[in-house]
Image 1 (cartoon, rainbow, N blue to C red):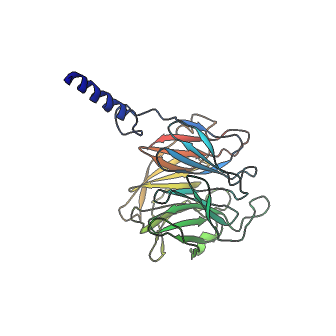
Image 2 (spheres, rainbow, N blue to C red):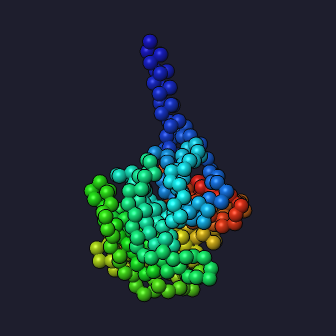
Image 3 (cartoon, rainbow, N blue to C red):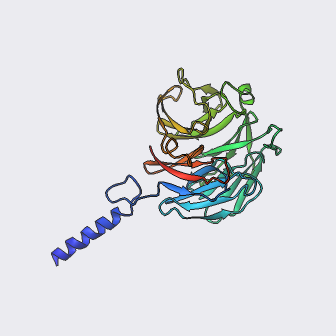
Length: 325
C-alpha cells in the first residue's frame, strides 16, 4: 500500500511538472517556437492574457481592426473581434478586469474590449481620423498603450500628445480621457532613416510612477513622470535605437524592438531610468530565416518573449515568434 502511494505521488508530481509554463521546471511542455498567422492579416500589436492566451491585431486594409486570440501552448488561433475598419495596433491586457486596450492607428481612436468575448466596452476618439496612404502624412497615429494600476496611456506617433484614460480600482476605464501635451520635438522628425514616426512604443515602471517612451525618428528613449508629465531623455551614451517600435520593461532591462533592423536591442537601465547601456541584440531567428522579418511589438510569458512580425510583403505569412530573454 505504501509503495502504491509513493508511485501515485510521483505520478502527480510529474503530471504537475508537465503542465508548467516554460522555464518553470522539469518537464515543462514544448511551446511552439513559431505560430503562423493568416496570410494578409497584417499584424502589428501583441499582448498576452490570462493563462497561455495571447492576442494580435490587424492593420491590413482588408482586415483592419480584426483581433485574433490564440494559445501560446497549442498555437491554435481564432477570431475574437471581427474587422472594424479601425486598425488595431499596440495592445495591452489588464488581468484585473480581463479587458483588452487597443490603439487605433490613423483612426485617431482607442477601443477597449472584453477579452473573454470580444464585446466592445468603450471607445475613445482622441483625434480626427487621418489617412496613412500616400501622398498624405497622417495627422494622428495612435500607436501603442501601457496599462498601469490607475491609468491606460496611449501614444500618438504623429501628434505631440499622450492620452490618459483613468482606471478604477478594478481596472474599469473612465468614460472620458485626458490629452497630455508632449514637447515640441514630438511633432518633428529626427536623424534616423524612414518616415517621421514620433512617440511609438511605451511601457511603465512597476510602480507606475514613470513611463518609458521611444521617439522612433530620433532613436531616443524618454522617461516621463506620471505625476508631473515632465519628459527627460534617457542617456544611451553614443548609442541609438533607430527603427524602434514596441517596448517591454522587465525590471531594469528594457527590450526595444527595432523593426526595420530585424532585431531587438536589450538595454540595461540605471535604477532611476535616466541612463542605460545597450548590452546585446536579439537577432535570431530574424537573421537566419528570411520569412520571419520586421518584428513590431513584443509581449512576455514566463522566461520568453513573444514578437509579432509584420513583414509588409503580402502574400508572405506573418508570425508570432518565441524568443529567449
